[in-house]
Length: 159
Image (cartoon, rainbow, N blue to C red; front, top):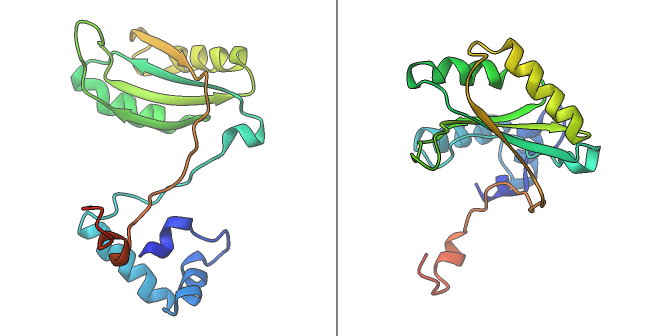
């Protein structure tokens, strides 16, 4: 399904439109994707938002030191909040890195992001949870997954 690597069309029926481009029915495209998910070849289908292009130029990764027995609940809560675009758990690396829950927050200014973080902290299930804020200083190119075709894997690159 290398046709997926350029993204789904922005249309009411993206799977039908993709199918028309590659000579498959909408049903077959959806079934093919479902099969790739079941095989573990695709983990998820998500949106890549070019947030800077729409004015969200202040971006912060907020890292939290959440009690292990509460991290799932806190992550689910954070993931439902406005302006939180990513939320995931990672292992701690004490003593230098005590944080185990990460979330990305976007705003139009650092002051706006700081205010959002304070509002989250005030309303969070664990309001006194230790945290740190890491503002982005550079923007890297974002893109979706890239899949090699059978021809590319036979070109001697060993992959």
